[in-house]
Image (cartoon, rainbow, N blue to C red; front, side):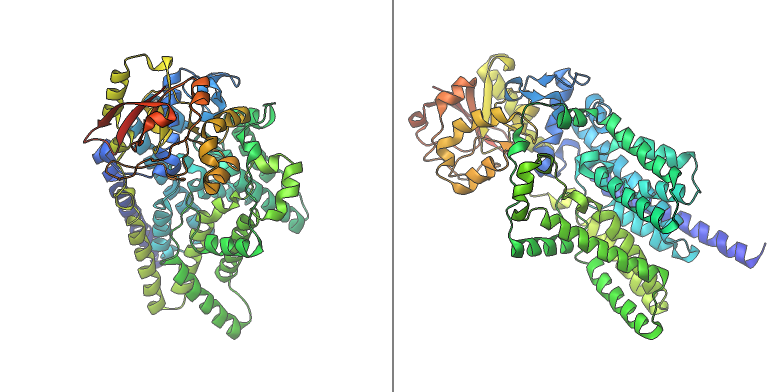
Length: 570
């Protein structure tokens, strides 16, 4: 056996051990969620306050396979379309149908992070960092990428992009096999087109077009791969297609007014996005990756001064950095007020958020990180140690963003949904839940929905505009007293909540908050006309009779984050 073969075998053995270590670290990262169960802590925004409850509502509704014209009776008087809850072909929907909510959530986390690691590792190994001696970079950059605090219900919408890019590049190089096509066909079942892969595929289409121009030849096979994955998304997410193109009635999305930034605000937003990112696609780059980026830029500049050319890793590093900055600028520019006249004329510019190319950031930034570490390693033993230290530190920082650490001051799953407490409320009311309607003040309607109550309020970005206008009449007296809340509801309305001027845009007042409502003014007659019977409030209302409410009882539980004050519309 030749020395070169022995060296390659040793590198392979070393890398295999690193992969095992990485998988063990992923398991350790996820272990608290599986061990603690309902006592685990996790993200509330766009998670417990919405998606997790939606999956439970859908599972109980019996409308998993309902038609595109079906509605969900439990929410907003049956005016919420079944299409608002995602496709029955989505694996996360099926997980929440067959497993208890917390277990389905945990299994989804495991699947997402495992395939994020596999996809990024394959992409780095085969296309970005192919040298044998760079095994630590390949494995631990893939590990770091898999540990990023992604939006949970996004599944592989961002974390699956490296796997898709790996498959596309294999096909482009004519090195493809059944594995590549299988990845492109199956990813749509565990990711979102609207919240990730639309932007990835449109970017890949541009890449294909540029390649055709450079090569002066149409790459039919690559185009077929793009079309295959796109068609799969349209089939899996046929409900989204039906909602966007077959729904004749306007929805609350028709009143989205996002473009309100001036030029200075656009630049500030672009800077913040480039530096810190967006809360649905955190990269946690500001502590380690950003300093590494600045050091690598200095090394590239010094090298260019000496040699007047860039190596391949240096060139790709600069290109990725430029692309990331351009995406951040586009993200901010989408909210520039100069768009308003065009958005008013072309409805899809209002109903679809084209700013979300920043969902590409996690993949691009970690590819750039890997290239930066390679550039450092090539500068000698001292810089190799710097690269290895930076890589280990990045993984350590990401461990500090474990949900159990990051959200430990927030309610746990059990405390948030407070099932025992809401069962007591239901028993006190003493009627089938389908016979009355409730709405919440000071806490998310998703909590009541999770517990089976029929609600007039909701958090959803796709419901009839006519319902928004009717619901607005209930809170109109409060909106008149608070411009911030009024603009929040009128120009977005995704949170169709019982907003009050005193509480503002906060909606999670936990027990012992000390907050009270002294001047509540709701249109209770409108509330009753819409079928409203009871109000669940997490803060006491002083003199409720002045607003035609009758206080019934306060409910508290050690297992709950809330004290619930139950009022009946008089």
